[in-house]
Image (cartoon, rainbow over the protein chains, first blue to last red):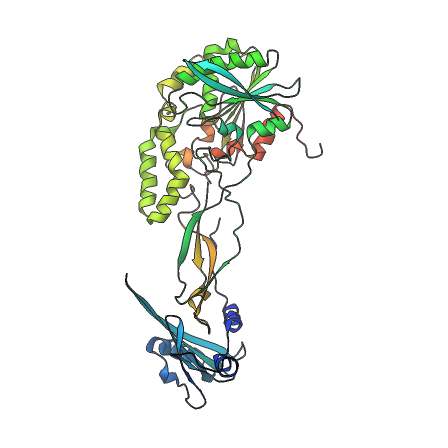
Length: 130
Length: 358
């Protein structure tokens, strides 16, 4: 009997991301009409997200990707920084996610855990690749 | 199928023989369980009273992935470990024989994990009790594991008590002895080594699955059956088949008992989503490599625990008798108590047409 091997399916993961996605700009601006306390919402048109803004390991991973895909142009369109699962910074406007064939996400999660505490910082950057 | 009880006295103790009526003209089948067992081995192997409780369904397809909800922590690695679930319901020997109109009798042997001397003496009383209920009915012994040696010892010493005996059928009985009994300490050491090589969670699962094997091979009942033991030499010395009785033996050659399974996070569980909390935990079931399935992963120290040669407790080659017709099945030792293929083979021996065309 051969043990089952889990092989990730990249397209399925992209689709799952898209299914779970909620546009927070629209939610807070048009539905709830307020940004939750402790969250900073910024407009990416006014405050462009640069690749240089990526934290070190995420930047390195993206640089590696760009080497193998030199013909692609990447534009970072969304950014979220979440602390212990709650967003602290969201850089997003009304635009939807890039199409699934133009979608790229690069993320980084760092954690610290002792018997008294757990702290999790997650950063998500969404780019359009063309 | 009405189950009736009759009391008998053995060594000052009142004990119980259970029996079921059958079609006239069909023999009554006396069911003899193995070492360390009791009546439920032959009558209700899926009962919680069954020991060892090892009717794992190792062929069951794995269930679909499970959604464990959202978390702010990435889901990485192992969620949990488990064994295959139990296969239920199981059809016992009493049930299948009853379904085909055979009368049956079953009881819990005295001193089931000790030497055979007392169970043999008790069988004399049991046979006498049975004769009062079924005075003219032909008799068949159907014996699992050490029950087969109980039958042989009884027939050698008291064969004259069962002139109506027509068949003796033994299921994975170590007639030629058990090398596993000779190397019981090595087996224990090997299983302990396997447990030490893994974490405490998996070690506990290995205990659940194989603990009975360690305890069985070290008990007196099994040690008496060690290859070349005095008991076996005495039994074989001058043993002849009872005239007019047909002997059939079965052996098993599968050591597959159970899979050790692990729920692990899918890759997607570690990828944050645009959502809070960001991690969507989904777990999937896999078989733990290297140590699963049991007992295929245990080093084959001896034929009994070697796939293709043994059934975990006995080696197929040792389950044969020179005066018996032998059949081999790819099942493990406990499976003899409920395996449908084996039950069909025994029913054919009993003259039953079990063709699906009726």
